[in-house]
Image (cartoon, rainbow over all chains, first blue to last red; front, top):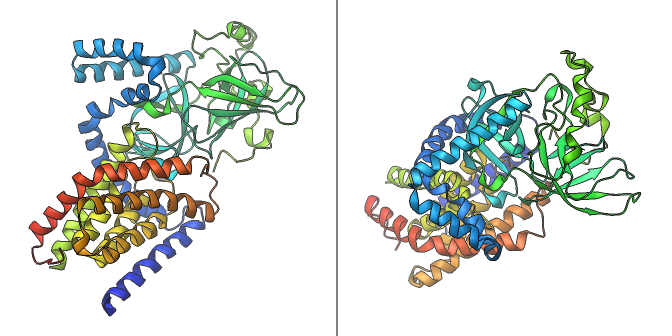
Length: 329
Length: 170
């Protein structure tokens, strides 16, 4: 039924796809980095335009969030509706963006991070099981690979690939993402890894006897040279701890501060602070009252040199941990 | 004319990829992202035939694998979409094309694409797929494919008839 020509074309296409897979499986930059860069430079501009056109529509993602757990949030929804009816959708969108920039500026100025602001212009499909987004800042804005990405709530992820005017960011909830974390107010450190679900992370303590309780805040403890993760950034709040003290694997479930399903304005940390800001960047509300205490001893040693940071902060997270997955991948 | 067919296929695929990555995936809809690209590939296959469907699937797969923010292996989606485009064009009898059957085909295709992506990624040694979520992702992808069909398939069919009237495949 199929003509000879059709069969030949089909066979060529199949062989071509299999060749692509095999070539790309070898890892590294591979032959596709230039192809990806070319497609990115074309699609980046189109995506940027499309994101602007669609921005009033995508702003409604908050609405979907409330639909998911309707019962608890009907009241919030009613209030939101009343608010929305009084303001134009466009104005609302702009105000939200300005607020996010304000929050971002707060994190950046309290922690003395140097931040390049950017906007999320595309999100990878959920079918890929990878949590990656495109932002509209690239090498021309000073963004480089493995830089930390934050928003007004805290850590968002790190830069995976960077092109001229866009960059791909892998979010901290991606199953292949892992971040060195520290319990705010204590010195307990561990690995925060993504689970693939947008509202939960896993925090594995390095010290099985270490203490961690629900309600504790987790901050990054930083990588060598501030890459891929700058120190002191809020990651999330412990909501559940499984396993008793001393058990081989103590794992805490952490709810991230940043809502990765509703990202719009983010910041890329182009230069981490000279000193670890410790816990000063944490949101002021949660029940971590003693977290301010460790700030004081830090200021007694105000050496501007990066090498004089405390021991824990200075250690490279790859070296300090038996990480199940390296953060660099 | 083969050029006209190529232009129709290319334009449809390009628009579908841009809309899926910038609009549909950002809506925050629960479950899978509505798979406009697969629905478009099926629509092209139904309107033009198996070879055009397979070519459209290949082009769409390569484009979505290469375009940011994709971090998956290049070629995986290409081969999955290629197979879907070919099957949709080859096994569907033109006499059977009521909207109900077409909706069944697209939802099987979008669900199948989601499942196949998970399966191929796991077979190739990826560690990202969380199999506890695969049934839900597959089902929601199938549902969204069903819902996109009444909009996309008639539009692509109309476009194909308009631009390449010599395609007497319907």
